[in-house]
Length: 279
Image (cartoon, rainbow, N blue to C red; front, top):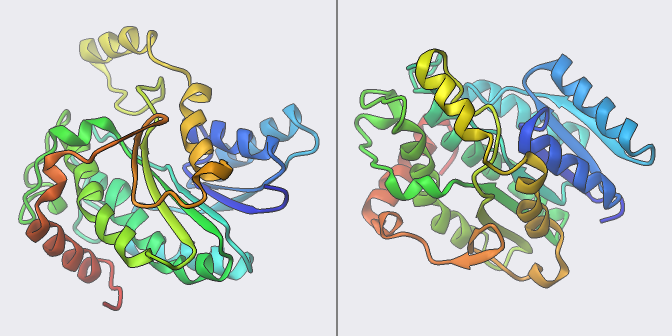
């Protein structure tokens, strides 16, 4: 991994920061993407303090709107002539309905549409840098998701406990089509559920928030959650693995919910339109 450029979204905290630290230990050139400059700078400093030989850089970028995601992709293209690894880690568990400037529900935007857009816009740079890898951080909860294309993107079916699963299912519906698009390109795409990890996702106030804090104490650490994504991004034995879904380090079949090809194609077309991408 020496000097291979590895982009990690949501790299300022949690699993993303732990992934960045692990990649830096493998001598990669790590690019942490953070919406918040101060948090991103702090993450870079902490990684470099723990590993003086680390090569870690910060790119400030927001995945909360279509325009901001396009801008982030352009910044990465302008700054890096090669990109060898893209880890789509950034995610939100919205406990309140928030609609962005595009009229899209924030969970749908950050968890699904933004990584889709990055995969599309950075695809040619990844191909030119081949062999290259994309790792999508998924969540086992996607199996409980329900997607209504007339409601889910716009938050009409928003629920503080269900929307996260719904938006993760959106990504998994498009995942096989994205893998098919990259077939034979020298760029592999795999998805991973990193385990149930103790992060700030889903944090909320009130009695339920206190219950969640107690429950999370038994969950795995971000460092443990980083193991499988880093393995997918770097392991020589996975050089040809493509279009696979992993529960931590175990390859498993996609759930039946992802096999609605008509819905997947409709969602793909909607993505292209919403994200203002050329088909």
